[in-house]
Image (cartoon, rainbow, N blue to C red):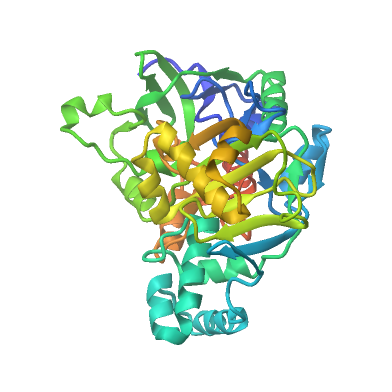
Length: 439
């Protein structure tokens, strides 16, 4: 194996990778970050696209509450943020005004979830709903819980942990924030911090092979370059870790994003496949005028029964941007459409929600961008959710292999803010601290 050139190599320059690199380089370690995409940031992707009147968020957009690490980084970077204002509104068959999607049964739902926790049990959400809320009386509740779990948590109710959702939903109601100028400002701050510490970030460098032995690693990229180090932190998305060879091993190297380990690490990769990983497509549409000004007054989020069901405004800002959010079964139907038909489906959904003509909306549309994260070759989805098996699987993944291979990312986070940038920051910081503590 080649001579060690770096103390630590990090695969992935998303939130976890940049955070780990910042901590390690500040502690005097020589660090190399290999990023597969053309630019760092991962699922933090602020676009400065021609046609939009300002920066728009194709990926992460919100700071979900008073999250200590995120807010501390914003403070250190001198980056301002503002609260999100407005209520959540449900629109059914074009009718507005239903603010409580759980039909007044939220308290009963939470009580049954609490009882499940007290019994020390857990089961998939679909099984829990079928057992505790059967029959026509609760049909609306079951549908709303599924829609909320899919839309907010990207969770598949057939496998998602009831207890995990209960613990997360207990935290609902906290104030949320948007970063002025977008998450891209925070990405740039972290990049500057890393480089100030001597860290090297190589973009367009997808890792393909990881050859390792205790105390030594060699990473080979898709174009054949080789990098050697003493330790490795793997921060790729769960969508990459869950990949299995689609072809015989002799040609599996051609799979985009697929990582091969020599020697293999089957226990950790099997644990990764026991975690939940959801898919999401985000739609950004800017119009000539905010035609929703009257109907949308005081509203931030809209949940509907349309093909593109979830939309949000930039409340309280006076903005001409609407953002769509598509998950679950609706996403599968959307995925098979070409770009033109996708735009038409979005406009038809908005036409029904706001009582406007699709042709008029088409004329009003200035710019549209569809962030298709499931098709992103180095993301392949959205973010994680807990299954019944997740707790045990995370214990495996959070254990370093021979104090040489470390894993980090939002899927490995244990705390009250799963599936967030804060979760990724926390995991990356923890991985760095483990390495720093070793010497």
